Image (spheres, rainbow, N blue to C red):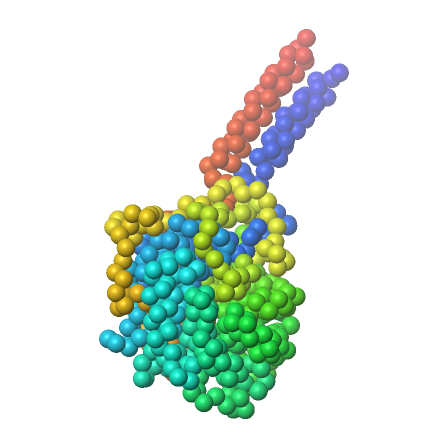
Length: 502
């Protein structure tokens, strides 16, 4: 055999070894000149939309386990965690924060002016988290605000709305049963077309009231919980026939008055509340369509910033300043839990790690069942943010907070210039319409004092979802494989030279 042929044959093997080594490291060990990594043509969704959203939201809480001092938003996150059955450590700490700092919130409008919507919301949280002594005190305050006509009203100038009334009924229903007159008041407020208004009147007029998507979602949940099926079913019919869009989402037309339905845009908050109402009424198919839309606006595994994965955007899959409120509202809907069904009594201690196969994926995913996922390459999010020094601990040894009436309830909203009111999960802020939302975005929850709490937040424990393998590991594996291939090439080459000289 000629030297040229032998030399060529000797070259083939090291090249093959080199190629095999490159293949064995996978794309994780490769990088282009600009530092980016090649992406596969097909990508996988998050394995559990609800748990991913809960993990992301929990990591936006600060070191004291609250959402930047926003009590209403913190309460939403607690209920979200409970709905997924995860994150007990964080949920307990956040609930303790709410309990200990209730004083400054229960009378947000001034001394002696009870914010009954916020009180009812916190009563619901206390019941979900089985804080019975505190829950009993909160429900006592709610009952004390009930007027003769069945309306919950905190003080003479209180502008309580449908969220206030619905939260009151939901909280008292868990505490042995809501007063009939309170349930009747919701039913009497129903508009002629089946929807429910946001603003309440002491003497409702079905012919002149203006139905509201979010308010209807809340009212229907309260009515189902109290056993008023007929009125609740009519509300569901209005939601599906009049408000659900072809893409499965729900819009708040009050944000675009006068525009035809073809120009409405679905948003996460309205959709989540409608989905919860549909689930309460066992309208599974319509609820699935809404859940699919929520998943379509969830930041998935393909996000450039791993810390954003799991967030639910308000109208699109982006973790911007509206995402935290949207996510907090969406979690129970993604978990298929109406407010009346959430129970935080047996949560797993830790958050669920984000599950992104190979560190890549698509925004949201497919299917209303949470999608499918692969084996996580890392487990971020399993450990909740550690409490700050001196912050409340969920342990039984934690001193009990004050049990005085002034320290047992928390309002969910303080008036702001952007009308940040409790139009999705909080009740009774001082806004006359309650339709402001975050940064003037209407129904984007607006469950607290901050008009623009962002998704960035104070990430006390670092990143939420660094789902890829450690950067150093694939590089090391690739380098080792390349060295082995190079060594093999040298050995083979030397043997070929020896053969040629014989």
